Image (cartoon, rainbow, N blue to C red; front, side):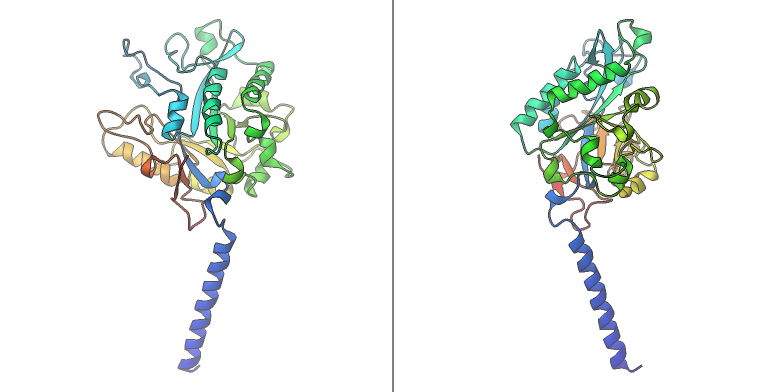
Length: 336
């Protein structure tokens, strides 16, 4: 082969590579609004309702000595995911941490908390999607006889409360994501999640619990047909769509994000913010690609002594996912 032939071959290879790259970029969403919501990352709060009694700091449980702003204030500051602990007391779902010991809350009942978020949503109709994780606390009945473990009827009641505050057109449900796919798992693996444009102004709900509560909720509803909430799932289940993986260093998170699943992880735990380890955990949470990065220290609530805070650049409420977002948009922050 002559030198001229070699040069021609080299040019051809470069042109082919450029063409392949152009095709790859053309396959990616041309604008942020067409990115799917599982290709984004959001800031969330842990025990989002929690307030401590400043006159009675809990010396036996120092990790409980923190407070969050009301949900609408958190939304204004950029939080887009909430975790609410639910206690089924006297026929209604109340929101607090531990019966008798730690009941401080910015919203006494679930409906009250949802209505607070709904009013903010009404005032900002093109907001980024908001997610709610609900944990049905286990120890309540043992501590307080007025608290009962929710049965199937109570879980139907829970769905009814969610529907009463956020109507179907304002909610992203498992049915919406599944579409015509046979299972929810199949749908999310084939980009069943809505685009940002389609999800603006909407909310989605996730049951945090596994085992008995999840079994009750999914019974008679294969792949969550007809249900309002997604559930904490795993790859083996047909309802696999949303996972809770609190350790941000879990090596499976990036793989599962790439597969299409929507994951919550925690950027911090136990109010420990001194030294390099908390910073490393926060950075690991961001880098993992988990769509919800949960914290006790969101924007506006930095740890006063160390300044530790979990927020994106410019305190933005979301950014394009660093793992599965379109390559040319990764890391780009989004407003409201």
